[in-house]
Amino acid sequence: MNSAEVSLKDHSIDTRHGCILYLENLTVSFDGFKALDNLNLYIDDGELRCIIGPNGAGKTTMMDVITGKTRPDEGTVFFGQNLDLLQMTEYEIAHAGIGRKFQKPTVFKNHTVYENLELALHADKDIWTSLLKRLNTDQKETIEGTLETVGLVEQKNIRAGLLAHGQTQWLEIGMLLVQDPRLLLIDEPVAGMTHQETEQTAELLSSLAGKHSVVVVEHEMDFIRSIANRVTVLHEGRVLAEGAMEDVQNDPKVIEVYLGS
Amino acid sequence: MIKQIAALHSFRGWLLSFGLLFAAIILLPVLNIFVPEESFFHIPDYMFPLLGKYLCYAMVALAVDLIWGYTGILSLGHGVFFSMGGYAMGMYLMRSIGKEGVYKSDLPDFMVFLDWKELPWYWYGFDYFSFALLIIFLLPGLFAFVFGYFAFRSRIKGVYFAIITQAMTYALMLLFFRNNTGFGGNNGLTDFKRILGYSLQEPSTKMGLFMITALVLFLSYVISRYIVKSKLGRILTAIRDVESRVMFSGYNTLHYKLFIWTISAFLCGIAGALYVPQVGIINPSEMQPTNSIEMAIWVAVGGRGTLVGALFGAGLVNVAKSWFTVAAPDYWLYFLGVLFIVVTLFFPKGFLGFFKSFSIINKVKEPANE
Image (cartoon, rainbow over all chains, first blue to last red; front, top):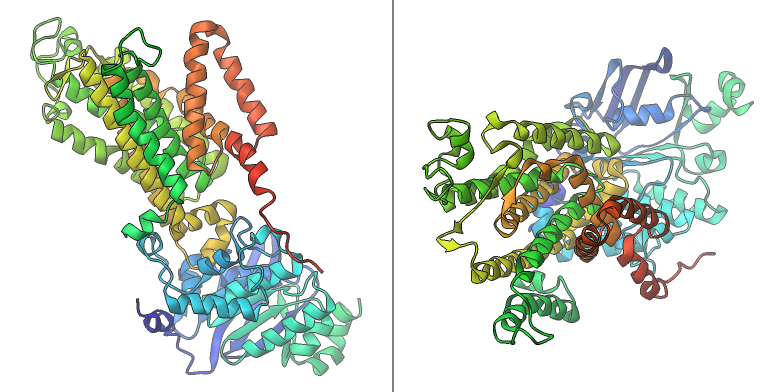
């Protein structure tokens, strides 16, 4: 199989206007509670954006909407200018190039680390390919390379369920990398990580920006300070403030609802 | 392709598999024909249909394991697919009785009894073995495909899926119980005389059927093994463990579930078709909800997610059943219930998992934690 053809396919996302993700007038309500309330958010192509906000601000709901898990009551979600994500299913969205890391680390615990990456790898994902094809050399190299990036070379034949918490987080990030998405949505990547692991993660995510667009939801302020160019603060399902970290930190509205508490 | 298949087992694994196949299709017949009857090693004629029946059950267990053990979808309706294959074979066997029935009519006896004058349209074609074979190969899978498509598309899973499969088998059982449905009502189809011209009373026919069953079981095992050892197999277990992650990795899990569900029904249908000529009867009681539950128990007892475990479980439970229903018929269901509870509580991975845990526990390296 020609691997170049595989990795170029699906990447026909129209970003001529510089934006990769458009969320407009999004409203999601659960039994009357508005998890998202007329949210507008734009992510630039190749940008690394941090999203913060107190619990219940709608961060995870927003990710659910982007990845097709939750359907909004109102509003539009476009990936590039041409792909209407609200018309697509979860797997189509993933295939179009949006990868997601869950808040609770979600890997395949009964599979080895290597197999986890194999399953996530960007490739044809139809039944017959899965049944009949084996990994080619390029694909194996991609996996080996990613194992090195996330520091799990020695653990590659271990069941993922046996990994330490930090390693599990890294494996999930690795799974996102081999999926080779245009846009990565990362929910609380450093929760439960040691200080050193947190630093390494910050480095890794910063290095991804440019080639990929990255959206990180996180509580850990030091971590955000270390990676973010731009920060968006969500509050009660709306954007409260947006801008450079220092500006946002000094914004009285933000201090009141979030940093102050 | 050959290389991939060869890699499915270690050398020892293949040796064992082929050894068992050899024992079934060569050794047992030799022991039957060439060893004198008074010898301890003689295999009596009646053993062949009995063993053949167990092999059919083992094939069912294989099918249930693919969908439940590997993919995490509990079906309590596999009796339907088994019966579909069984009835298709039974219809051919009925037609091949010819005019030798009790009423000396060209129609099957039960139709004469119902005072039907001609063959219903859905019996057309069953005069031919090839047509029956086509139906056996296509119908259970097709039925499963349609049923599965609607169930999986609506994202019905877990206990809800199990319940609707129970409802499905119960509904079809009631349908087949009716005389007017045209499949012999509660008596089902029986009194078969011959298959492809060979008398079903002949020991050699019985032996032949057994040998074919062993061969088909072997092939089913190899196919199943090929599936679970491929990337597709790993995707199935991933669906079982965290389906949402599989979807967010870009797989259309509907297709995967539908694929394995259909394969499972296909294997089950073939098992049913092989079962009927050896047992000599197919009736709606095969679609009793308890029958399908028992199939799941075989797999649970042997060990879910291990094909060998499923085969082993089917054998173990059914040998126990054969013995129990003679020695203490009233207590069989109690025993089965207790067995299921004990296995679930103390051996969640089945007997095979229990034995395996001794040998593997030392091999798994703990990760280097800081």
